[in-house]
Image (cartoon, rainbow, N blue to C red):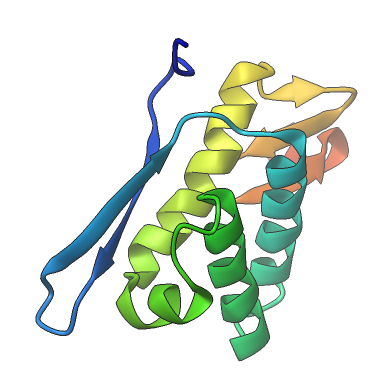
Length: 124
């Protein structure tokens, strides 16, 4: 069977000495993961807490089909890469649906979802 098209979103787990333990990829974004990514972006806007970081890690575990554990992500996942995965989910979905639907815009650059009224040009 052919695989999904598009650029895959890649995640790497690292060991204690920064050695690569595994590289994982996924090419499709389901509605469920887009919704979770939107919620996660909203949570991050309200501040980074341990709970938010654990939620991000769990999102990554689930997104890659539980091919690794939450503990492995917490111990061996680079935080910058984790945030990049969140942004990539939002960006890929935004590109697929044209970035805007029913006055709601997916903005991956700021990792946020806001209504059209929140995206007005400040010079208008």
